[in-house]
Image 1 (spheres, rainbow, N blue to C red):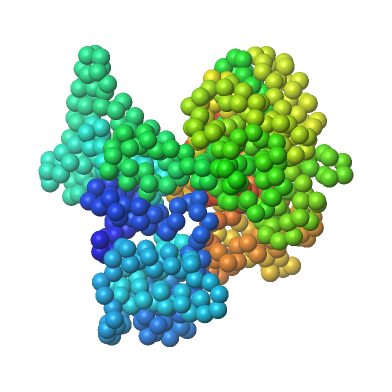
Image 2: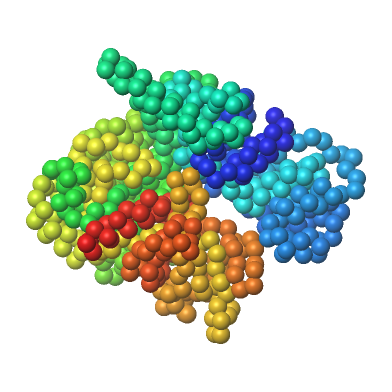
Length: 626
């Protein structure tokens, strides 16, 4: 496949903010992509060359890209930097200069997706003496062969700035539209102007003609047909469509790789998706909890009786074992096996079995008092690469096992929670301050949970969790099978997308941060600015200096005191209330926000709160006032 074909897709995805249109363009492209090229294409439309769980990153700085543009275009590096300062987009600068070069390099050839993908992957393999020059040559080779827009998207991909709006929901739906046309036919219609079959919307994706009347009639006809089918006892097309989406989502939840899922869907259909299995050593997105305000609401959601557990202030640790090999992953799918050799030993010594995946919470404790400590204290261990043994002594952890996804190679996520809990209790030998089965009770009474909540708080935890006894494990989903009850206003986890340099004594720091939540398509929407809650000295807590150090290498554009940054840093933010606001893209603003802690070690940008979360909290807040 020519890379120019993929660039045409990028252009189309970039040209619209509408989810239906993005899904249509991507589905059409995937349908025409060969099975051998599906996986690299799926990764490249996400701006990646490895799946999200793979730690390898392209990791090339803008200065090296500038040098490669210099070699490929013959333009002075200073001029490139000046143009970048004007536009704020090094991709557009590369496009302009490559377009304007007087003569094509003799060695240049038409770029293919494979060539671009291979060169970008090779960037991650180069290390040692001379590796910087070799990386620059790989980039310059691509740019020398690129034609205009190709240079723009190659540059953006290398710098991690592609952002064409292909979130997980769009990728999932596009796979369904591409490979299961019969199942999705009820969400499509024929355009009366161009004759193409397109999504039901206000206008035709292909020719732009208005579809209002036709779409309305098509929907009405679809509903009537569906009702007839239902009356006849047959499964409706909409039901079939939702089933397909569920199969795709389930396959993705087990692999964290849409490339693998798309290839299975194209080559093997629904049966292929159903045969996707958990792979020991490949992390799975953990099941997430919803927050509830009252115990009455909690029991209505999970049913009676329910299991009630302590909610620890630690970090999720997904433990994989396959024979003698053990892997440890955080909620962000980051491999931290090296940082926690003590946990590896706990698993070998106190857990029966050679093949399993455990879900747990690693909680730090004071080695002298044996009392639990807040997450911020133990978070240092996630980052630590050296002096591991010393760190184990200073910052020990206790692993609290609360769920199991796989045992002796068998996928058990569909088994009810009570059965999974029985397995945990049989195979984990609870050993205090090393590894234990999470403390829990089963009850159907609010008063009992209230008492247990007080015990949990006294033990230094955040509150309690309530779990449905008959529920399956739903990887990657925030479902009503698992709830958290903390009795406090729910904080938000938000990404920093821009920041401002301070004034006076704070002039050396980025001290105000623009925050964003996620919409359903994976787009970041600003929801306000925060500048309180941080300290001026590191020893006092999370400091302006520390956040500035994290943000500085992520800067992609500077406009006076304002800098735009690559979204990577996630902050937990408290606030007094949520207000409607036309100022920010989300339509909301936080009143009196303050930073609680840095959650970047636990959460990636894809894990932050969504616009749906914000809207739910806004409604809850209004209800409580009324």
